[in-house]
Length: 360
Image 1: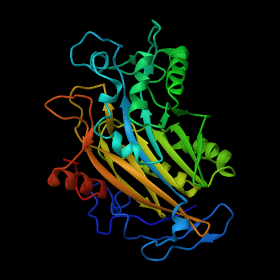
Image 2 (image 1 turned 90 degrees about the horizontal axis):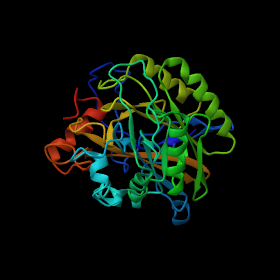
Image 3 (image 1 turned 45 degrees about the horizontal axis):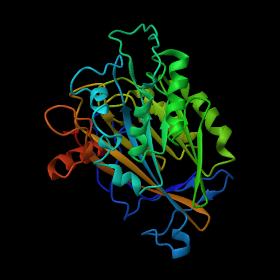
Image 4 (image 1 turned 180 degrees about the vertical axis):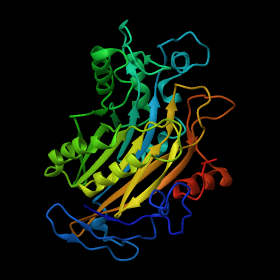
């Protein structure tokens, strides 16, 4: 495990429960320190205040950016509805959608997103769904280039829409994304990358009930010996609620107890507060990002950044949050961008700390 350097240094009045909303912060320059047990079983001591490093040591660091649900499609794959994402994708260059955040992602090492739609050029029948109302999302394979042009490096396909058009639809989606050079992850296929001598394993998975944490732990353990850092990027929970369910909190904490160094989630389509549990950040929901599923989704999201640094053989973590709008204008134009309004920005940050019931 690792030592976490970054949390919000402030007291929190929990809006759900004190256990769900502990203090967190966005300023990586001051430190919150905790000892964690490493893979070898030895306790890793906390770093010194300020986290100063020599120039040589500072070369061993990795910056990750996580964003939430990217639904690069329109319901039923339609392209004729003016203003829809598919309609827009036929009239704008791929760079249009991420153009206001692409610079942020160009300056990190890995940008990780959830891709929640099917990319296919085949006329496939939708799968039957029990839940109502039900939705199916697809777009042309060319639209996978939207993710690439936005400097996305890794996508999770572990969600409830990449199988909207069956096994072939899923395969077409993976092939379309991989053809752009983006790495894909899903259940049974973790993503393992290395940068500056730090090996990172990302388990992309569905997380729909408490008991699923056992299978996620097993998948994480399979990559433990080959990685320095294990991250869980999950998809699950109840939609449109701003507080994580008790089962999700308990399950996410079980993942940390089993050795996860960072836990990040999505699916509710709205933000949920984060917490620091035993020194490990848990982000329960990132909300939407480039989201073609709704013309007026909740217009707040974040870019969650994690900075891993190896100092004297130990890996330490600091974090940052970049509050964003999901879109500009009266309705969704499919272009998230950072919030500059100080009041709106502080409300998002306070919400992520657990000091507000809503992020707006």
